[in-house]
Length: 126
Image 1 (tube, rainbow, N blue to C red):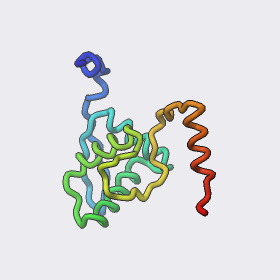
Image 2 (tube, rainbow, N blue to C red):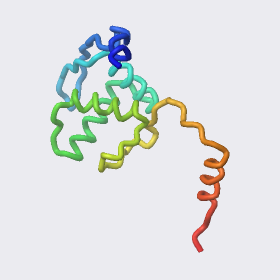
Image 3 (cartoon, helix red, strand yellow):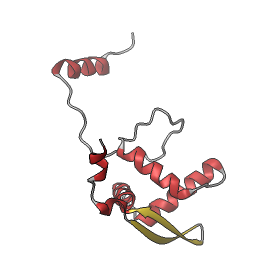
């Protein structure tokens, strides 16, 4: 089991610190490159720079919670949610950004499963 984790490229867990301005204050964020790569992918999907995406996320969290505790940990959790497909049954929030989806392929359905989904989608209330 550990081979899966031990053999990953060392680049994934190299740290990088980036500086940006959030709410008029300069700050630095230190994350592993794998997380920066994921944040860049999310920001690109939202047609934003990473800095703009992080500022928007920070502002949304501030609006929702009144404060932002441990923003770096929040970013790591966002990346995990994104990489897992964005469906987290344990969250009780509605994400304002509707398009956040991993680029992983959807699981293949059998012909029977596809037919059942189509039937369910087409059924109208009586």
